[in-house]
Structures are given as C-alpha cells and as structure tokens.
Length: 184
Ligand code: SF4
Ligand code: SF4
View 1: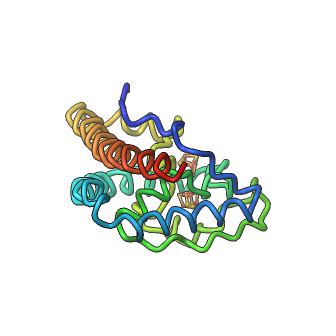
View 2 (view 1 turned 45 degrees about the vertical axis):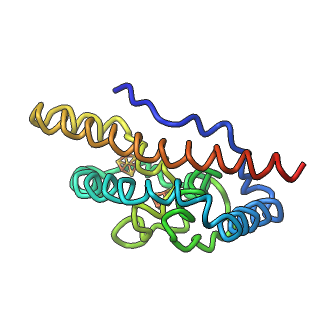
C-alpha cells in the first residue's frame, strides 16, 4: 500500500541514546509551542482531523492485534520503538498531550517499557507514529484474508491519518523554520 505523508526527515533527530540532548530538544519544543501560540493556530486547526483519524483507525487495528499478537513468538514492541521522533513530539504538543516520562536508562532491545498486561498502556495518539504504522507479516495476512471492502476502507483510513498528520506537520514546519531563521 503506497501512502504519502510529510517527509519527517526535515526535522532534527531525537536521539534517545543521548538523554541530555533528547530532553533538551523536547524542552525547546515545549517552549516553542508556548511562545508561538498565535502563529501555531494554523497548526492546531489540523488537530481535530488528526484526532478523528486516529479514533477511526484504532478499533480496527485493535481488533486485528487482539487476534494475532497473543500468539506472537517475537513481540515487536522493543524499547527502541517506544521512543518518539521529533515529529511525534510535535504532534503530542499540538494535541496538548503530556509527553510520556520516558525512562531512557533501559536496554533498547528489551521489551518496551509501555507494555502492560493487555498490550500498550499508552493511548494510540500518545504512541510514536511508527507503532500505528508497523504491520508485521501475520497482521498483514489477517488484513488481506478478510473481506476486500474491509481492507479497502482500512487503507483509506490510513491515508486519511497520514494526510491529517502530514498537514499538521507541514504547517508546523513552515512556522518553525521561520521562527528559527528569525533568531539567526
Ligand atoms: S504486531 Fe506482529 S510482531 Fe508485533 S506483537 Fe503483534 S504479532 Fe507480534
Ligand atoms: S506500541 Fe506501545 S508498547 Fe509497543 S513499542 Fe509502541 S509505545 Fe512501546
């Protein structure tokens, strides 16, 4: 499935292996949001569509993961996948979500710190985007063997999510680059 979104590689890397820098970048982003409230209204206006797209997609993904994940021998949720990218933090802040208190002093390959008894304890909107995006082969098989119309509507919902997130990030990028250039 070819799904187009915003190219998040334009943002700096948020490196969980460098805790001091990781938290400093997050603090700077928080400051940027509180210092540019008016300008960021163009970003915030994309939030309802992003929330709605997550809400629409979540039950379907949940229904598939509930079928497949309990029988998985190689659980994909490792700490290194539970840490956010810069773009994830932008979306969290735009949606006025708390930034999860990541414990960076963990084995990155060990099972993710956010796994609870019934799967991930974070609401989907507060997880890194990759956690929604990743479909292992058994999950893809489940999707493909179901009714074709379910698969088509699932792909359409994913497109919607990607577009909503893309629009928000694009709006943020424009304001953020202006803000950073005016400091130079
Ligand atoms: S998404 Fe796939 S790899 Fe990850 S836990 Fe579920 S079945 Fe396992
Ligand atoms: S879905 Fe949750 S538990 Fe799994 S890697 Fe993402 S944050 Fe961690």
